[in-house]
Length: 270
Ligand code: SF4
Image 1 (cartoon, protein in one colour):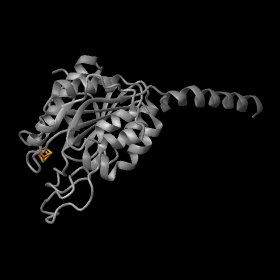
Image 2 (cartoon, rainbow, N blue to C red):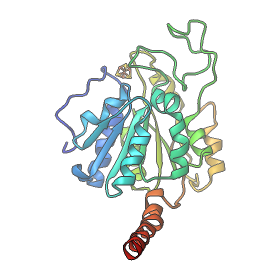
Image 3 (cartoon, rainbow, N blue to C red):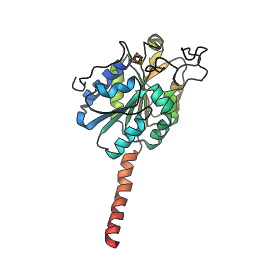
Image 4 (cartoon, protein in one colour):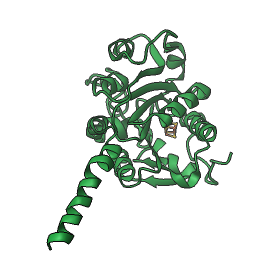
């Protein structure tokens, strides 16, 4: 309750994004994140209205650019908790290049991607995660492109924390967002979040969503990839986690002391 803003969500009734908002608020409350030390950054799309509904600082940026804004912010202010949110069009179409570099830099931010396999805001065109053959008003003969696999891509890029949740299971999703926020490095939470107005996937996902086996070892990227590539099931849970240096920490340890020495040098010899 403390994390809810006074702005009422403007999503359609039944939108999956309500479940993601609920899960995010729960995770913030569980972690007792200070509202003045937390920033939620988004791009453009239905799900990118997210920062308005949370009582932290927020940045509703431009299409596809939530990750660059969030990474820049964390580099400048490593003391803040930074969460980037958006949809499948935002993250996997116009903004997909940023995913590659966020994975390489491993800056300590969390990305929550609400995937409804459609462009809801612009009335239901196909997105990169729409299935091959999907028919819409603007693709009457069915989508000709293949379907993008977000979790398999994140694992292939060696993102240091990869998880998937389902908006209809906000408790489990909240636990994943909590772990992702605590992870030191770039964490990626893919969320199945249906758009009942333009492409209702609730029934299909209810049937396909399966928790990862209890004995899944999240240090095994290869095994995680096997689960991510399963074409029948939509596994949810923590796929992969690895601790490795984060760019904002390395920058402070390596670059700043050197700048200090250069400063001393200038003072001595100028
Ligand atoms: Fe949600 Fe779809 Fe409505 Fe957008 S159009 S608010 S994604 S239900």
